Amino acid sequence: MHSGELARLAGVTVRALRHYHQVGVLPEPERRTNGYRSYDVHDLIRVLRIKRLASLGVPLERMPQLLDDAASDGGGLLDELDAEFAAQIQRLTEQRELIARLRIHDAPPDVPPELAPFIAIFAAAGISPDLAKIDRDQSVLLAHLVGEEGLPSLANLYQRISAFTVVPAVTDIVARFDRLGPGSTEEEISALVDSFVDVFGPILEDFTDGSEPYDLTGSATLFDEYTEDVLNEQQRSTLARLVAAFDT
Image (cartoon, rainbow, N blue to C red):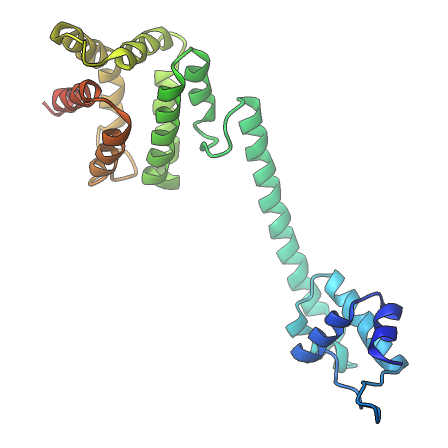
């Protein structure tokens, strides 16, 4: 039979047959006088075996031993495949759990699931879309910088500043910060800094008490670069005063 007939009987494409030849799982048959390959039923059986192995997830490079060694029952390979698939199932299960957590809080998919509940609280509290985006972006960056070990501590910080007893004050501070602009007075900015220190001071003091399992040294330049692009002059000045207030 010619390649087209073999492909039809085996349920594969002629291109697949050529690939099997190239990787060495299907030996090249003799050619007829007209130059076309000539296949027989043994080739058909081998292609069917290749398809069966492929359906189990056996890599093509592992197939020759199973196809050519009559004494090989493939038990060891099946054990490897089973362990690999079990690991894949575990990863997929974990991914589905993460997706479910994001859906519960109607959070965007690029937000760390550990922080999604708290970001959603402030989004629902009515902060502006611009500040909501800034909050999300900085949360993504901060979660990356603290790493897996530091994420529980960061989530604890977010939980504390999103507690129902604190949310009204935090929302008020965020709204006042959002309104800062060229017309803002020194009194407004000073009052905002004082409010921020009063509300966030005790929380941030616990968060940066030296026991946290991460090091944010050198990360300030990243946040400075980010705020330079998204905040106005008065907002950046206020942040600088806040940093100075917490450094003293």
